[in-house]
Amino acid sequence: MKISIAIPDSSLSEEPTPLDKAMKISQIARACSIFHVNEIYIYKESSGSDRDRSLLRTILRYLETPQYLRRMLYPMSSDLQFAGSLSPLKIPSHVQTTDPKKVKARDIRDGVVVYSRGGKFVNVGFEELIPYYGKDEEGKRVIVQFKEGYPKFSIKQIGKEEISQYWGYDVKEISNLTNFLSTWGSPVILTSRKGKTIHKTQKYFDEISHENVLIVFGSPKKGVHEIVGKNIGNIPRSQVLNFFPDQATETVRLEEAILGTLAVLNTLTRN
Image 1: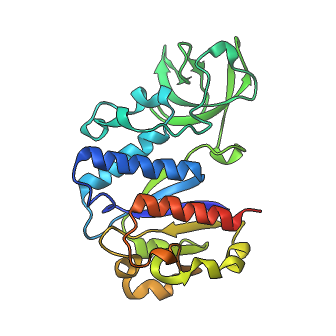
Image 2 (image 1 turned 120 degrees about the horizontal axis):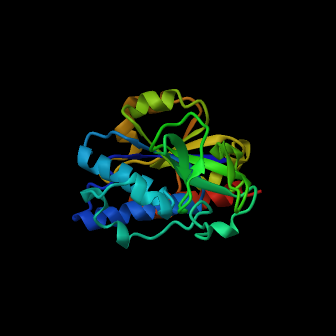
Image 3 (image 1 turned 90 degrees about the horizontal axis):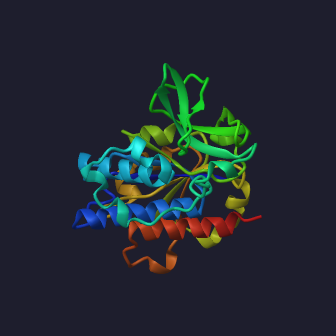
């Protein structure tokens, strides 16, 4: 199963300080990396703000970026003032050697396209730049696989889908959640207290275990039913599920809901 999630830009609305907001985003990023989420969609919600949407987008992308590329891709900004306090994700794309002599053929690494000496190169975190013959422009982040390791570095560009390991999530924004859900095309899970209890849906998860599933979360103040409204029954291939039936009268924080939902989903779909 491939998993994507959708969260509102109002996700941070109840956090009182910029540090609290940053820590919440870090917890969301960590939950997504632990359970191998492919895409995080940030959707607009009526109580959201441009400021919080920017913070969500920037910190989520920053945390997913390997440490050796961050200075090239992220200039100093107020959005990242607490970046040093956030937990690392420790995903395979981050756990890379800093010693170029240890790089071997078939190793995979993220890099950034740069211009130097009249040509295009890839900076993969070493002092030595590697010639690049692809179509991407300067500043673009790319994934490369080494055809030859040290000392005669030679690379080819590859896509994330060609990597057998989990290589991080992508962050995207959507302006209209209802329109997006109507065109998703694969199973959609709407998380809600009003949904069917998760303990009665094993057959459903067996049926979708090899598909690209989107899990939609509500905001701190509004559930998915309120956000989607009367169109909730018209979303193709959707199910409204309650992943926390034993906490029906308690408020579950978004970061806890994401972690708990993904953990339950991992258990239900494990082969």
